[in-house]
Image (tube, rainbow, N blue to C red; front, top):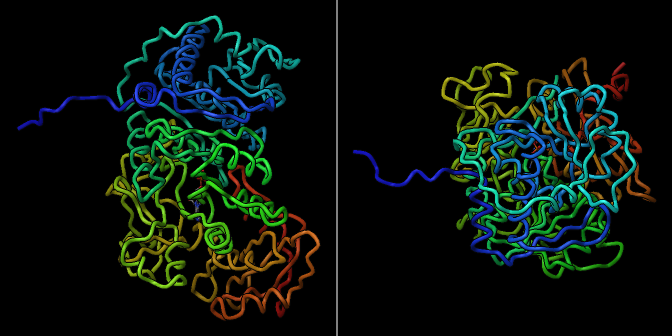
Length: 543
Ligand code: ADP
């Protein structure tokens, strides 16, 4: 017997329609790239997304075309997303932090037809222009008054294009399985690979993210995604916010502690999301300037492991709940959040922290398992670690144009490239990325765990642990430390700080001080570069 329910296609445009009908007056506030604060409502966003769709259609954008954006989190970038996706075209977010040759590869691989960009990224587009012949036109996301001088051919002014249109546009009724978004992985090994989101996967993922144990956005919330839209859909907040009617606060390109704090307070933000480096910056600002957080209720930390000190400071000093999240571009991107369960609520604060610092539990729509090198499933005992595999309706089944070949195992699971443990409560903890784990005497050492303890030392701004070859143990850990400005701290002090917090055989063989640690385009420590930089470093006792 067939079910007799309607086939209501899960299209991204339905999310904005919902906000328009049910939350028309809810605000969308942006710190614009040009400087001033801009505010309007979901009703305005909806209308302008339709004008944008009409304007791009007039320029020649067709269903199935790939249209690139190079933009910060702003209202205009949101309009473009919904305008492109609502036309049945594919919105391709480019990460401006990538090297030019990577961007060049990505634009050509994706065959981008148009590039919509912020004024601040005009120099990047100019540098790409000669080698990216698929781009037929550039739209600069500003008004006439702020339009810069440019060598870009066919450069148009976004506000002029919108002014020439009205809102009478009907969203294109595509198949819910058709492509809506394209985002390339950072490509720390080999060329970047394209992850293709569908309308259906975006809608299902936003529903999952709005679970109460995930981000759980509500109409009373004000969400500020600091994580950029070019970093895996701003962790789905750009869909989850209009779906829930939460006020949306877009921080533009100013992500320093002072700017972030000002917007959090001025706009009464209740929930915000970013990578740990942003939070370290904000916490430092709060402490040095003696500031408070008066409206913020929860902060999502993800993209890299949350250091214990970040969680402790937010929760104990500022009274803000920390949600530690894990995910990846291929997972739309959220896979887990470390919300406590009722039996953990009874534990001591120290015991709770152990759970909260794990990467967390999966929502409905994400299945996880761990397996050994041969693919055999390993026990969920919180101790055994293995390759972390995932399955679900918002997880990649292949990369764009088949790059990388077959990426699922025989049961349809995708290998995340992370090594992790799973416990009986469903909590997952990342040990390391498979390629960064340190193999010492046949056992594995978690670089992440040592790094997160080291940044708990008051003189340490940032820490990275890499494995160096060792004649007896195969590999041994080297700790690279960036000191806080003015801090006086030496090797012996750091090692005694770690003593007792980790197993003896995990203790780094050496500590070196550096002025900076390299990062990838999504804010992660660039371990490959560090291994190269320290490849000739002699560990004590090694001749
Ligand atoms: P994103 O763009 O969301 O950062 P990427 O695809 O660039 O995703 O990187 C995903 C990888 O980032 C994961 O496979 C994992 O190694 C790392 N990662 C993300 N969140 C965490 C976390 N909370 N703890 C540890 N590692 C994390």
